[in-house]
Length: 85
Image (tube, rainbow, N blue to C red):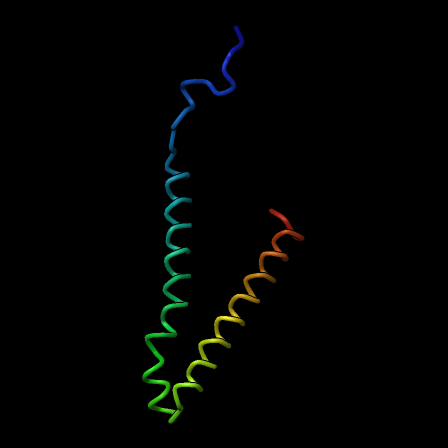
């Protein structure tokens, strides 16, 4: 019979460092979603202050999301090229 690849003692062992990493990653995901949703919350104020129509506000949202997504793609590609240092 062959021995298991993972020893039973190391299965499911979460160190404080792993919990800290998980906490930081969850906070980053939360702030990412919060950042994108804040545009929708700010739209009435933007429209009132600048006197914009509904169609102009849609352009603001579209431009923000397209720019945001484009920079995410560039950041991902840069991370692939540079790698973990």
